[in-house]
Length: 286
Ligand SMILES: [Zn+2]
Image 1: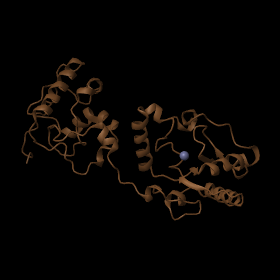
Image 2: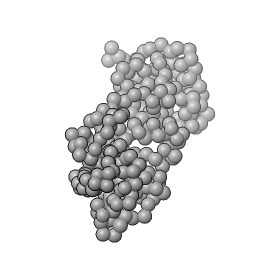
Image 3: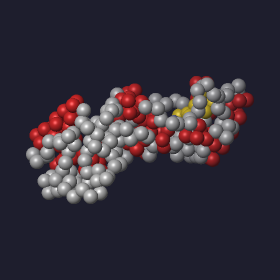
Image 4: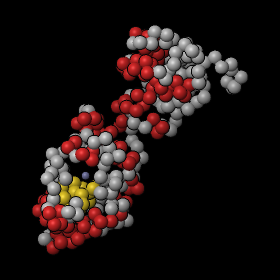
């Protein structure tokens, strides 16, 4: 429909992405929203939304982008040559104007040359806590289900690294003779599952920094690599703490007495000193 339109304004996906990228990044995966309910092309501006756009434009102008236009019908129309939405100045200003930045529900996928206001703003909190479809295929262990190290049909167990699984099974067999039963509380996790845990931790602990003490990213997590396992209950973790080294099974973090990884050298030399928490682990630094 806009095919015949003269090229008076910049194409938008780029513009919108440049401006809204920080927001989208802070809110997790933008592509998840199925409905695309947010930015319908040509949707009229509700008064409140338009106010947001006006405030945002004012803020950009006050922060180093004097030529940023006011919204027209709740949309920013950027004339070529007037301002480069991809410039560092615009990005820096957009960052400073975070609080007045209009919310967008998803990355615009339309080819229109206009940014429209959202029809239904989605709060950051709502986005973070919105249910993601995760199941056993992601390594989730359903509540109340006791999973043993021998339940290899469950991805959480079956996708653990073979040498870790082998060590766990030998240890579990010997522990059983001592009357102690191992349960896998968490094993292999998909990157999606790990990302969800991280998002939940940011909400729970209030900041990414504090969350990092407890939950790794999908890129750094030993669970995602199949190289970490959380063992319960307490007496099983205690058994491993005492007897794990000859199997190469070591606790890594002082704040996670349940988390074990394979350290083959431990069979001879014992387990390495503990890190206080994951932030001390060089592997976790990006
Ligand atoms: Zn763990």
